[in-house]
Length: 97
Image (cartoon, rainbow, N blue to C red; front, side):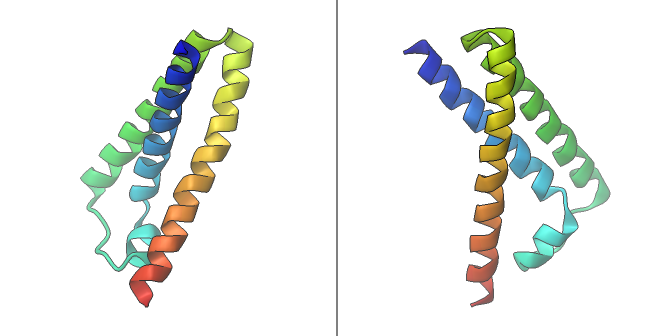
């Protein structure tokens, strides 16, 4: 049961980290019809996204062994990218309509 909780936490950390990195990109703001963030906010979002992604790795390693945790983390990166890209695509087309 603890492994499932750690998996959920790691998934949330990865999705939040990738969303922060995506938020730092001006083209995503333009697609959503918003003004791009200033340089300070972009830098903070990139750093926060990197920290969240980095925090997901020891979370995965804590629930499983180091090598399996690393493979799980890489798999969660794939899931997170698909989730964030899908959300941006959906919200971008929804905003234009």
